[in-house]
Length: 82
View 1 (cartoon, rainbow, N blue to C red):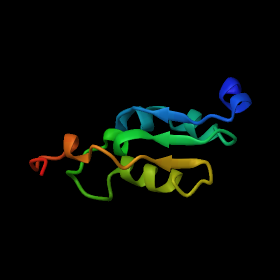
View 2 (view 1 turned 90 degrees about the vertical axis):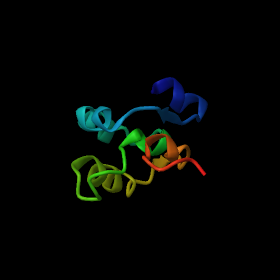
View 3 (view 1 turned 180 degrees about the vertical axis):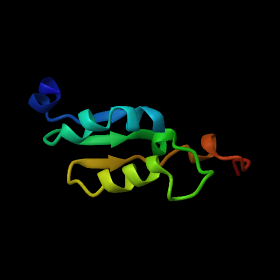
């Protein structure tokens, strides 16, 4: 992270929802590096918006340095790519 800060880069997290929850404390501690959750965080779409991982993502995105890449959602959807 120190090197990313030095270069002015961001961290791109290609993870799944369990990774986000299992590393929640570490991820929340990263305040001065732009953080991008790639591919919606592969949280899946079933189960609704009240799941812990969805609530975690919505909460962390309120932080100034957190972003989400909205791409390839069809990979985690039961619907056909269209």
